[in-house]
Length: 257
Image 1 (tube, rainbow, N blue to C red):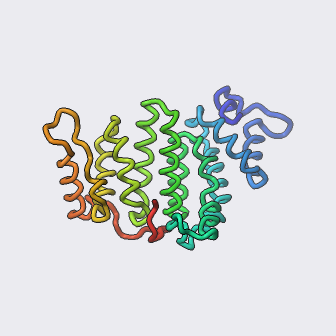
Image 2: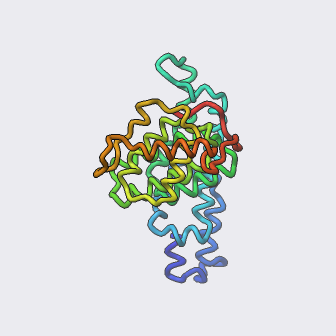
Image 3: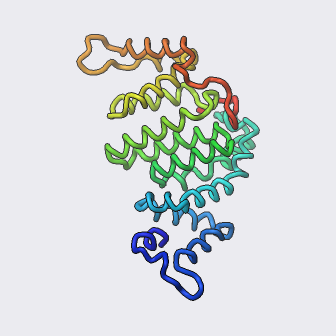
């Protein structure tokens, strides 16, 4: 409705003692009583008219409220045990992981632009980088099932850009290699590819031989992409090509798997 009021120019239309836009603003100011479902519905409805809603600050208010609701889940992840869940993990570790990631599926329906706004806000509020990284990988995987070619390209670039803002210690080398494969098959920008290679290069010492055996581009005479491996090694020697490898705010030492 907010976007409709702006579009129709009825922001000065008066109902009683308050114009229509003011009434909507008053409703937005009562976000504290909105349910989680209400916020998700509002965000999904605004995706098609994001430019108007973003310029008015409405979407940011909704996202800020979502982030506040996620605070308890983020705190639950601070024990660090969520990053070492495997077949031998205790029930307690699994429960901690579930409490920290329960919102992944709900927010994976949002557009890449909204995800970018969400992650930037979470980073600025010093939320746990391990959890943010896990969500970005989850979002990428879930979107690739139904997205068009153009949408996949946009999702890849947003996810890589947002991963680049996180502390490297919160992202595993193996997970980044998983992103490298679809990037090589899509028309992503050179800047995006450079960021991904910098992230991988900064921790190439953790890569396995299987990770490095990447097929060469079609038309090449050699079986594996030796040039890519050389670029990754150069990035490692240069400290990740300027990639911030020192621990950042909200980061945890355990690796995202």
